[in-house]
Image 1 (tube, rainbow, N blue to C red):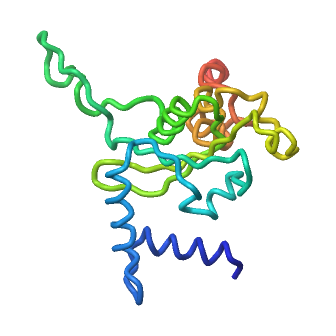
Image 2: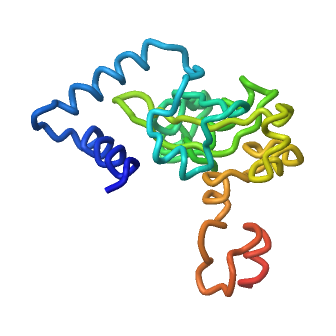
Length: 197
């Protein structure tokens, strides 16, 4: 096995809570307690899951920034109507947003660091109240990024998180894999609706 395989297997044990010679569950619990005390959006020095970060395009060089974002679980709070309705139509419970929690995390990170651009993000943990994601961000104005042919395309791709261009965004738009019965992945929800009618 290579180095990244060992890193991946260690993290899998940590998330699964395998208890052997080293108590991975206790280690994960300690991390979550610490993260919960920190601000909702915090810059970190290096990725928690290096293997996943590398898969999503992270490089350990200038211009790359890792940000950990804490997002609430559940469908969010909704104001209960004060006029008459039957309970089913109150619109308080079981109302979910059209975008995933991961996309919310990416957008919040981009609003906080608006001079940077979101490349991708990945899950790092959860407790009873919050999900934690690490967002890979890039400084499009940094010379090291402008001179790197692998990543300098991001200079011309502003607002990726808000336009659904990240991996999580594309999944939410239905572009991750081929649509049901379609020859290719659909370009958008509306275009696909017209095609199926």
